[in-house]
Length: 92
Image 1 (cartoon, rainbow, N blue to C red):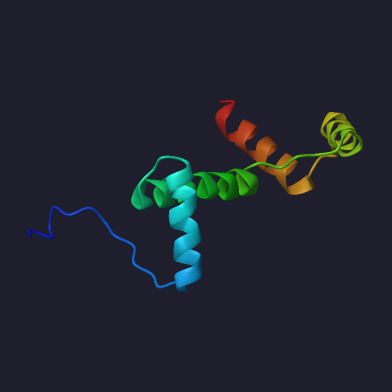
Image 2: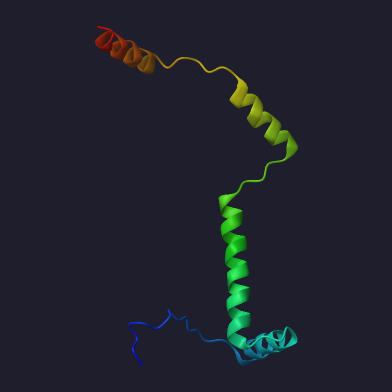
């Protein structure tokens, strides 16, 4: 077999009882073992990644965040100085 074109593989060991339970679950869904394992791993990976990419706020926390975002900020002295210097240099 030409391994340069082979699909990536995962291999792991498990207790016989776990393998039997997984095979039974696959059979109940009408899937072969590989399809069952891949679909289950894919679903779980999507859940984990989604949970870490998204933050769910309570209504109270959402309201507090929106209030904070809508409050006017205070000027940052170094930034104000930089803007003024830039304007002076480019105003002719």
